[in-house]
Image (cartoon, rainbow, N blue to C red; front, side, top):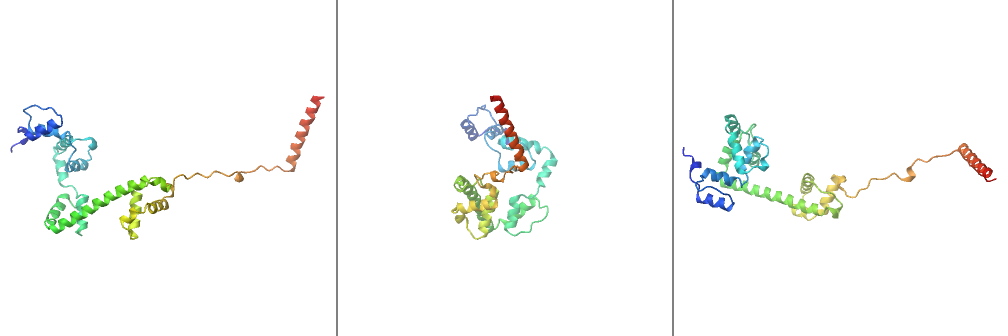
Length: 246
């Protein structure tokens, strides 16, 4: 099989390298140019999926070239190749099964789920229905992030500390279950903060720890005998002072 990596780099690759300010020899190959370009890009979604599956550390700092080299290293081991091919179905696949009410088998493998989904999406109506569902989920996620940011930006006005994502989701789901649409929830920040403080009173700002009142402090009571002793001491002091004077 022909290895394209050894072919001369394309003019498009050379132009990209020049634009990135990367020096390269005139006889650079496609593979070498691809590796250099990859140092300026992030790993693809598929590459990240492989790295995460094998729990490779330091993914956040990897370039696409780093990721590809690591994947080549992983897949040099046939056992790892087999493990990847036999991996479980991912969350998106399971969500598609649930959306279309398809029974979810135990130990569903990625490749088996993919076959079912490819066949399912041959029906354009179902493919469109899933796309619309994904768009709504994406819009909802954006709404959550934007609204929470704006809500927390006004938290001082409502004497409330920062609301977490988890708590905000709980509040929104509670309000939605009562029949309130997202648009109305967004327009009622006061209600959101009231719910937040109702769920977690510790979010209230400016709360002061109660100090013990003076009236609650224990008092020292002196009985009659005590008073007599004190009086005798005072008289003795006065007598001594008088004697010194005379």
